[in-house]
Length: 444
Ligand code: MG
Image (cartoon, rainbow, N blue to C red):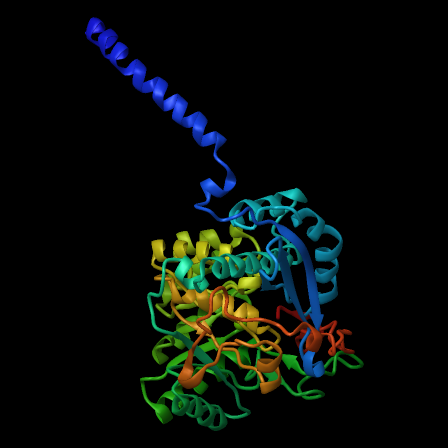
């Protein structure tokens, strides 16, 4: 056996020499050879476009200029609560780190950006990184002459089913507004009764108050978990079984009542109940699983894979609903979608009235190419925004349609954006303070 091995070794020697020579030749090849003729493309400049159109939005759009004249990409780094902090982080810390890097190496730049500050996955860093990440995918698509979804494997659905937001002051009004969405073509509708916590609010000054204490609108969780199942019953009686109903608890409940609420919602066949627990109480999903089949969705305030990975791999939730620009852009979102697909969980990427169309377009590209997709939260903008950001997705009939142009298919008119300078409006520093009747804080 040894002799045979020796002879085989002799025979193999010329082949090994040839392989070594060929490896040396490969090393000597130019970048253009290795990339089938594409010239080396680097990040030449990165800057935030900070804009507040209609005084209503507070957006940070990242623009990445490449070394190829005329080739650039855009991404969303919007964070309504910390817009100027994100813009400063990009200008002062991240742009100098990104300039000069090869635009093709998205995953490498993604991790390098997370590691550069040693501590990673914080909200501002993730927003800034998301802006860059989307812009790099935009550039890659433009360079390839393909929409981003094509680079992610191609469409697995023809357009993106979205859920609408219905609200109202009374069960009748909510049901009427749900019906309006159905008439427009939506199949999935989120039903709230007076915003987050609505149905559980005690009006200012009413109820047994502490003398000289908190007098504002107060959240009462017992009132809430009695009112919302009745609302769902009313909608079912009025509109029938077909509408796919969603409700957002927005983390207002204590864990035991969250379990009870989930159980009470079961008869109404919910599509999902959203954010029934806050991130710090995720283990309570196990208790919910023991008592009810009501589907659970969460993830919009997650910023770190350590938060969503156990939720998905332990199948504690049914829908992972991150905001794409909060977790690190398309690169992070497609990894979440693939993880969801593997574990039988689905995605329901989050939007919100504060969000910009670039983020929505990026989410739609991932949705279009994702087998792990469940539903997409809707977002719509007035005509002026479609003018400011040509290619903003449209939602006729409850489905989002993206512009099919290469890349993300969306652009921003910088001159127009500069006409809307961003100054945080008074009161915008506090979006989510909720209190109980004794003045104590309730989780928003
Ligand atoms: Mg929500």
